[in-house]
Image (cartoon, rainbow, N blue to C red; front, side, top):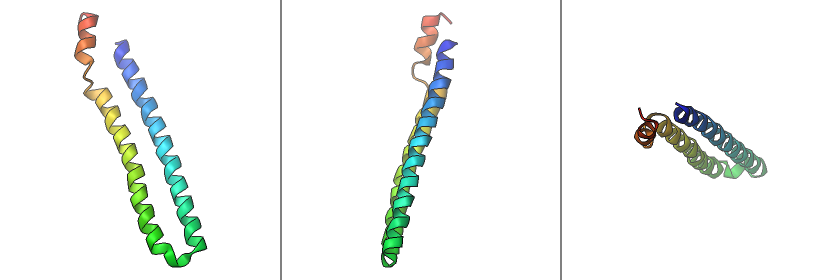
Length: 88
């Protein structure tokens, strides 16, 4: 049972760190885009497009972290080995 508790803790920490990192990245991207538009309003279309593509790439990292956490929780490849070692 200790193995499954560690999996839950690892998934929670992983999701927290992944969300924190992507949140910081998105905030910095939007900050830079707003500064760029403030300096050159004529380039707002190109800046907006590039920012949206960048935000999609950053958000995909959070989705990857979520998928890995769900694999650790529900489709862990080591579950059978741990249960065998535990004698259950």
